[in-house]
Structure formats: structure tokens, C-alpha cells
Amino acid sequence: MRLRRGFTVFLKFAFPLVFIIGSTAVYYLYEPHGSIGLVFHRRAWIQREILPLSPLAGCFKPERISPLYNVSDAVYGRKRFEVQAGVPMRMGMDCYELAGIVSFAEGERKTEEQYIPPEERAQFHTYWRVDLAPLGEKQEYMLKSFFATQDLPRSRLILWSNGDLSNYSVVQKYLELFPGSFTLQIVDIPELAKDTAMENHHLLNLEDKKAWVDGDLVRLLVIWAYGGAWIDMDMLLTRDLSPLLEHEFVTQWDCYDKIYQPFNGALMHFYKHSPYLCEAFHLMAHSTPPRSPSTDWGSVLYHRLWRRLLNESIPPFKILPFCFSDPLVCRLDNRAPEPFEPDRIDGKWTGRPGEGLEEGGALDRALGKIFAVHLHNRWDKAFPEGGWVDRLLLRRHEEEMERKVRINGEL
Ligand SMILES: *[C@@H]1O[C@H](CO)[C@@H](O)[C@H](O)[C@H]1NC(C)=O
Ligand SMILES: *[C@@H]1O[C@H](CO)[C@@H](O)[C@H](O)[C@H]1NC(C)=O
Ligand SMILES: *[C@@H]1O[C@H](CO)[C@@H](O)[C@H](O)[C@H]1NC(C)=O
Image (cartoon, rainbow, N blue to C red):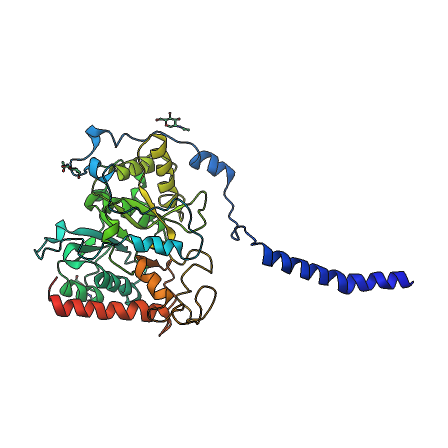
């Protein structure tokens, strides 16, 4: 009888106590690791679409390279900056520090004051589908961030759309302020696809509700035709992108290195008539049609192309580390705070002076090192007034833009 009571007491109190003390000790001594998100990929899809390496189209053969593309410069040339780390940079602020190194020294670049015709400037492209939503204040934040942070006398932003945007007062304002650095264009997919493997392809008039597949196609076509960098409309630029433009690149999806979806095209750069894009069109034209919505013509396509380049001994395009343009996609302790919630002290961002979200604090310095903040299409959310996005980005963009207009007049 007594023995049984003793046993019950043990089960009720001593056992849970031992368990709690034990696991707390283990937690303090060891870091638990493991991916939290669980994704299921169909094995048949992996076997069919991801693993096999079909041959490339031969776009890198000397006789097929466009005279507009200098392969000895673009692919094999010496670069000023290294943009890849070789490890995932999951510790502390390593990724942000690497981004900070990709920066010209003071006075390193000659700045001639000569006027450069808009078509000869570095081209930047973005896209807005008029049928999805009107272009409003939230979309204007991206435009503002561009004009505030980029080297305007040497840059031009082309706002692509599938309908007329010239009616919007937002757009008219910037066309007037920055006539040489901003222009509108309507996407004509069959026209842009001319002379690529996608010319007259039956998949060209594919359209999906979320503009995923559609947007993925448009970005490759306009970069092919004009060359330059693509910037998704849901990005806020934080500094001049020009140190990146010696490379052709896509970006890392997040800091976890997803095995079947490692790349993102929300920010990418290729030169005009780049053989990398020529190969991408070939791959699109000769693969299973994309699922809709999906990243089959985005992330998945870049990955499939990248592996084929390796297989044929062609130096692949670069992959910018996650934080360069997407500082929200890592762990709590090294990602930027939630942009759509009021500031709060947590994890990395402490209340101690210099370590928080204040002006000149840790977050401010990190934002000055990276190039953009990708907001992942959360158009329904608003930035809290006085929150870090408002203080450290939006208000400064407004001021910087006004300063440029005051000093330079027309750009
Ligand atoms: C690599 O490419 C070659 C063609 O250049 C092809 O014959 C070979 O099967 C590819 N490798 C794999 C593993 O598929
Ligand atoms: C291509 O780039 C290399 C290295 O920058 C340069 O020496 C060469 O003149 C360029 N070729 C053409 C045709 O522009
Ligand atoms: C938009 O432009 C068209 C002509 O292109 C004009 O007829 C129409 O009134 C304009 N709408 C607005 C809202 O400005």
C-alpha cells in the first residue's frame, strides 16, 4: 500500500520535475536545430522535372553569342566585388556585413557631369498589372525608394504594365520630375519574345490570377530585350545598386537554402541578349508547361538552368545572399523586424543604445549595408506610422528625393 503511494507521488511530481530540469539543462547546453517549415514535394515531380539534366541549347557557343554581349567581360572578366559567400551565413550579422563590403570607396568612381541619354543608362525594370489593382500610395513607395537611392543621372527605371498607366497622378508626378530617369512601357509579349526560343510559343498567352507565371515571363523577356536589373514592385530599395551591376545574378530564396527552390528573381540582373536568358527561354520552350500559380518559370527555372550550366562547364550566374535584398527571410535573431507591426524590442533588436531600431542604431546601420527590403506582396498591410519602415526608409526617401529635385532640377 505504502509502496504504491510512493510510486504515485513519484509519477505526479518527481517525474515531471526531473523531465523539466533535464530538458532545461539540455537546452542550455545544446542548440536545437532543424527546419521548422515542412514542405512536401511530389517525388514524381522531382524525378521528372528537377533531377534530369537535359542539354543546353548552345547559346554560349561563340557563333551564337550576340555582338551586343561581351562574354569575355560579362562571364570571364575580372570583377571588382565578390558577391557570394560560399556558406549560408546564419550567424549574427555576417550576411549584412558582407553586403556592406560591396560598396565603392569614396572617390573610386569618376563622376563626369556629362548628360547620358536615357537609353544608354543602367536600365531598371519593374512591372505592375493594371487589371490586378490600381497603382496607389503603396506602389509609389517603391518608385520613391528608387529615385531617392539610385544614381539618377546614370539610371533609368522603366515601369512596365499591361495597360496604360499614364493616367495615374502618381506616375505623372515622376515623369515630370525625372524625365530622363523614368519612363512607361506597355508589355507586348509576342513582340518581346521575337528571336528567342519562345517566339510564337503557345504558352505565351498564359495568364494567372496572382501574376506569378506571367510576371516571371515578363521579367526575363524585358531584360533580354533591354538588359538591366529587375526590381519587383514590392521592394523598397535601401541603397545604390550600381556595385552589383558588374555581375549577372538572381538572389537566394531565404537563409535556409531550400533544396528544390533555392533562388528568387525578385531582384535580378542580366545584360542585354545574355546567353543565360537565351538558355532560359530554350528551357521554358522545351519543358512541361508551368503550373499556375507556381514558381515553375521563376525559382524552379533558374535552378534547373543553373544546374545545366554546371553540367556543361559554363560558369553560372551569381546568387546574391538572402539579406542583400530580402532581410525578412531568416531566423528571428538575424532578420529585420516585422515591417507591418509597431516596433518592439525582441531577439536581436534590443533596447540598449545603438543596438535597436533607433536612428543610427543596429537596424539602421544594417539597412545601409544591404540593397533592398522585399515585402513579399503583402499589399493589404500598412506600415505603422512612426515604425521602423516609416522612420528609417519612407521618410528619408521623401527627403532625399526632394533634395535631389532641389539640387539638380531635371534629371
Ligand atoms: C550533362 O550534359 C550532357 C550533355 O552535354 C548530357 O549528355 C549528360 O547526360 C548530362 N548529365 C546528366 C547527369 O544528365
Ligand atoms: C570585351 O571586354 C573586354 C574586357 O573588358 C575588352 O577588352 C574587349 O575590348 C571587349 N570587346 C568588345 C567587342 O567590346
Ligand atoms: C485616362 O486617359 C484616357 C485617354 O487615354 C482618358 O479618356 C480618360 O479620361 C483618362 N482617365 C482618367 C481617370 O484620367
